[in-house]
Length: 287
Image (cartoon, rainbow, N blue to C red; front, side, top):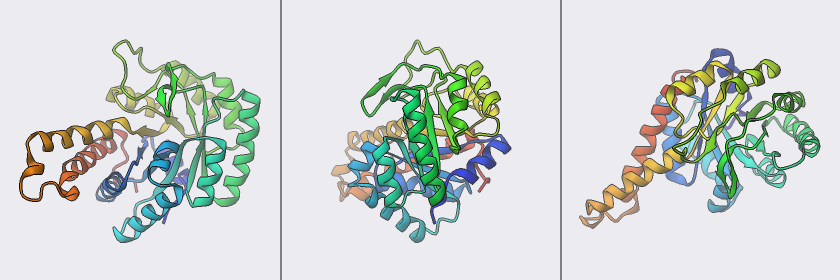
């Protein structure tokens, strides 16, 4: 059964580890992540961007697939199904479809409007038992066509949003979606520290987990980050394993063209990557 992300993240924050949000794109992704979480006794958050939701034929399709897998694969670890970078309308669609957690990304609105819309969603999510993530300050890189440069959020704005009653807060601390450029300056731990001092026990979220060095990840966790989002990294290893399979001509041997065989190396690569991340985040055996 899907659960809200609130309890798992409160526990992670108190225990100085982080829960991974691994974005899903299809059945292979979902199955690989759920099995890895179960095998490693780790809580997990399945992230769905608006674009991926559309690609997978809508939010109801995603909910049906995930709920079916939880039952059929006997998944007993805590699993949250979370809308990633949702617009205002998408949040309502996901609440209706049966998601257990949503992120309202109001960072494109003026702060007053972001606050008003977040307040409304706090009330709706609380009534329905969903967890709510808010964002302050744009995260850099490309996210569904929006390009940002890795800005740092204003700690006072973070406190204003945290005080509305959200369950977790994503704040820009120089992080970027996608691959990091050569000249990336690294995470701003000063900003993170200032945000944590003002937001207290609120679990903080680090977007753009791909390519941040492990020591920086661990330092961020020590400063209050309890949820780390990973997407690009799983896509890269999936593509690499699939390319290797085809370049080696394995799809032309026997029934190697069968999608179950063709996609198996990529599936295994996702599992290995997710396990590696869970080890770094410290979430193994925390279910």
